Length: 248
View 1 (cartoon, rainbow, N blue to C red):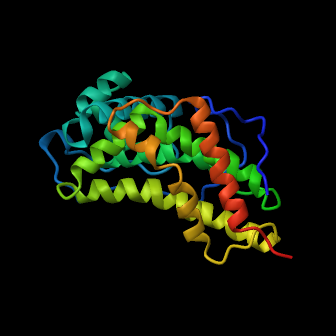
View 2 (cartoon, helix red, strand yellow):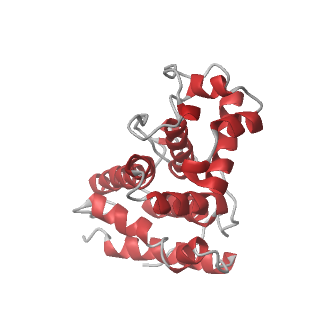
């Protein structure tokens, strides 16, 4: 079986709209990590943010600071200043700096799988197309410098900040694997793939993008070019399609 290129290729290194994606789970907010006096705050308000544009500015500023300084050294006050809001405004949206960190990870992960609106858009009868789209977005995420910075920050915090690591896993790898596994179950039910262990298959597929190029990025070495990324994407999809092809 061969994998044909789609109009989404070649890989550009930028995130592109994905209409065929899924997400189903709401996140929880961390509350167990050690706090400094800078992080003491009132409880966050529930529900949809009153000002989505301001909410997004806070996330963007937080992403930049977490990438540059790590979770422990990032300052809520500095994040608020860069977002053009007060520190209390940050805390009105997020219960703590750790809750803000988790929201940043969740927002980045949603770019791969597309949000609640995409749940039904992943067509189980077109797994090749869906996997190319998901793989392209995930590959983009694993190559971006601010995402790599978050990986470095969390790996460096392992042991010392277990709740940060759990949040990173919960909003990152666990969400992606579980949601891709759900799509693979649907493809199995539709008869387009034969997947006995969907979560294992999802893990294997996403793991194919965390090899040499990702490691080079973590180590701040020369990154793969667009041609290498495109070849990796096509081969990863080809391998999964062949491995789980429905046998008549």
